[in-house]
Each structure stands twice: as C-alpha cells, then as structure tokens.
Length: 423
Image (cartoon, rainbow, N blue to C red; front, side, top):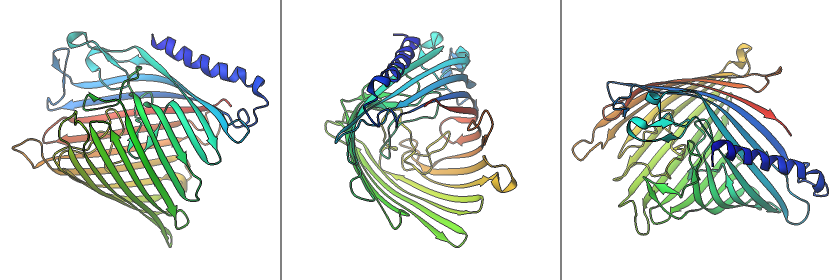
C-alpha cells in the first residue's frame, strides 16, 4: 500500500467520523467535546560530519545528511458518549512529502530509507494512519488501538517530520485526588521515519510485547511528585524507574528539582544477551523573571548503555539533547542551560535556549574507559501572538558535537509548525 493510499484512508476515516456526527447527535459529549486539529510542519534538517567520522553512503564518506520535508498531521479526537460508560474514537492521520534531498544526503530520519549500497535512497513521501478506541467510567479510561503515547518509560519520538506511534492498550486511573495509575501492553511500533507497524524491539531483537505499570502521586499543592514505573520488553529487558520532582517558590525565584534512578537488566530468555544498566540523575533549576538557569548531572553504570525500545525518545534522561543523550557505557555527564523569554523586552513569544553538556568516563571498548564527548546547543523560537498566522511557531536549532570515539558533527535545523483548529 502506498503512502498516499495510507493517508487517504486516514483522511477518509476522519471524514467518515465527521459525517457520522449528525447521526450521533443524541450521543451527548461525543460531538460537543470533539477536537480536530491539523498541524502543518515544515522541517529542514542538515547534519555535517567532520573529520571523516561520518558513515559510508554511495561508496564514499558521507559529508552530510540534508533533507527537507513538508508534513500534514491531522489529530481528530472525539469526546465521550453519555452514560455510565462513555465511548470515543481518536484518529491520527499523517503524511510527509520530500521537498529536497539527494541520494548522497540520506538518513536524516525525516523519511524511510529504501535500497542498499549505491541504490540507497530516501522515500519521496510516506504516511500512516493511527486509530484508537477509548472508553471511560468516572475518571478511569481504557484506550485500545494505535496512538502517540508518551510515558516516562516509553516515550514516542516526535523529533522529525512525523511522530512515532505505538499499538496496544492502556488503562489510566485517576479516581484518587493527586494519584494517577497506569498499566498496559504495547505490541506494535511505528517509528518516526517508517510507514509500517513492526513488533517492539531492542537493538534489532524483536519480541511480542512491552508491558508496563506505573503510578504518580502529586501532593504539597501539586508542587511535589513521586513516580514509580515498571516495564518489561518481554524476553529482552526489564526496567524500574523512580522519580521525584519538586518546585518551590522562594521570594522572586522558583527553584526546581528532578531526581531519578533507573535500574535495567535482561529479562526472560534474554534475546539481546546479558544487559545491565543503572542511571543516577538530577536536574536543578532556578527561575526568576524571564530567566531560567538549569544544572544537570547524569551517571550511568553497568555493562550496557542506556536501555530503551528501538526508535523511542531518550527524553527520560536529563542530558538527552539534540544530537546525543550522553548514554554510553559508564558515562557520566553534566550540563548547564539558560532559557530566556523576551516578553519583558516587548517581544512575547520569543525565547532563546543555550545548553552545554560534557560527558566523560565512557567505556568505548574493552581497552578504553576514558573517552569523552561534548555538545553545544542553541534554540531560538518564536510563536506569533496574533493575526492570520497566530500560533505559528518557528524554531531554529544550531548544535555541535565532538567525540573522542564516534561521529563529530555540526547541525542546523529549521522547524515551522502551524497548528490549525478545525473543530
């Protein structure tokens, strides 16, 4: 099935739901609470490899990865029907078309890559449709199907032209004030640069399911949160995650802390072999006026690098950045970051972020355990506040990464998101 057919089915599905609404007028809430948004995303990606550290492509050193995409992301979410049990439906239709990019600049992950060797090339377009049914009793929701799911121990990646999605089922319980409980299973994974739905995997080893359970408790006027999560990628790895966050006003300042501990190891038949990884991390922030200052520390230990499902975001780690997550074997890293809002200077919607991260103590091989890396990252972002293009968001990212072992690179990205509210 071609990408155009896939996205057509998605649009037809969303359209069918919209056409059915008049006939479901008695289903109070299903229509009244429905929301349909279309995000127009324009994404330019350019990564230059330095010092001949880039991969081979078309038989030569690849000097850069550079591609340009226009994406259309339709997000249609119904409300719930009336009654003790409310029912609803969510549809996510996604399509991306290539505006520029040659054979020698592939693998930006804006598009799937087809072929091998000299025939390797990126697709001209791709797309997919995700549909999920949902049911709700009181403050308990069951969702089954495929959607963009973001959990601390399984984060769908939305860092390119189209977002990643998972297929499965999830139960969310919010019956007790301040307490949220989660549990479920995912058995399908559609990566950010893939139109197909594959089994869940780690390091290329596939398995039948990813099972998870977790809870988060907020108290102290919701300024403090404790989270505990358990995940198992069947017959590959098991993972436990403990998190503590706190926000504390002190005069004109707001101080924040995000502490975390992750313990991962192989599970069941250990399809991917012996795995062993622990992460100790902390992020500490101080906000005053238009300025936010942040300091992070992240330490990995064990015989494996950070363990996560293939294709997912490394956002659980406090030092996950644009070009590196600083998640090597035994790696320790620290980062300093500054965020500034220009609202005080009369330019609301304009912000600037600068971040520097340094990692060392990396066990790069059996004979080397002192490798290092560093990155410098800048993002200038602006959201239009009014007018015809209100809410249009422009982000310009520039970053550099240097490593003792691995790829040296400099990178630029231009990302434009224009969200349109249809319903």
